[in-house]
Amino acid sequence: MIDVAANRHARKWSRREQVARVFWALACPAFRLSPRIFWGWRRWLLRCFGATVGAQVHVYPSVRITMPWNLTLSPGCAVGDRAILYALGPISIGARATISQGAHLCAGTHDHTRADRPLLKPPITVGPDSWIAAEAFIGPGVEVGARSIVGARTVVMKSIEPDLIVAGNPARQVGTVAEE
Image (cartoon, rainbow, N blue to C red):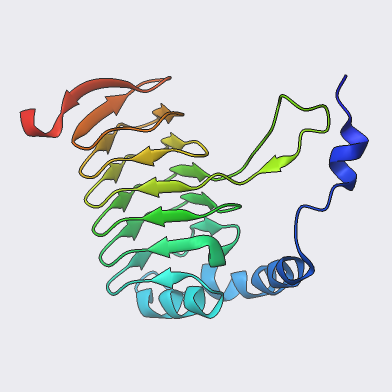
């Protein structure tokens, strides 16, 4: 039987994380209401909240970020409109990688094998020069290899080797980058 009460009473965040989440929620309007071309402002704001952000990173103002201190955004990467970076655990986006509009990177889940369903925070890594297309879902613990392409609305729950093109639900290989 599921022990919902035990899950709800479990301490999932340190006091410091709880306070940081409140301050991030208060700062989010400054992030979301900034003009699209204010890339530097959003990079600075993310760094103020502990994100590691490289040069020339473009994060659009409508991106939803849960815990910026769990983000690593390598130089030249871009995160498009309405993308969701659910960074309960670490999310690392490689150099020149693109996260397209509406994509969802989910670095949080629950252990379904236990009655109290404790929170898990497995990391997500998107390799350099990869492309996560529109409205794709990248699940917890997934590593997307360098130069790989994840097609629009694809659901990725297992790691992908470098130079692959995947599509569908669940994700299946449909080609290699070398073929294109």
